[in-house]
Image 1: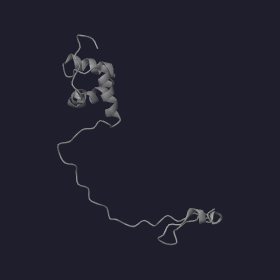
Image 2 (image 1 turned 90 degrees about the vertical axis):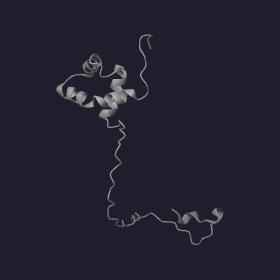
Image 3 (image 1 turned 180 degrees about the horizontal axis):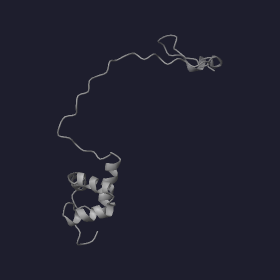
Image 4 (image 1 turned 30 degrees about the vertical axis):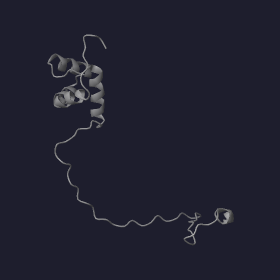
Length: 116
């Protein structure tokens, strides 16, 4: 980092991006590349973030990984009607082993020839 540049506070790049998001999306739709968009925003003093930070935030936004906290509470979803799903049927040749009682079996006395 050079002596003339000052680092912006943590998460400020995301905040600056969100403030200019509509403009950035419209410029991308018009065919401008990332470098020209960043230069234009810097010249108009709309962002102070570096080009590298701009690219990282833009990548997160394009992958929908940009976490945006909302002031409104999340919508309440109506629970779907619960219906029982049938238990998966055992495939032919597989054996389901169930304990014969509540006591644990001694592993030394288990007949392994019946298991396979």
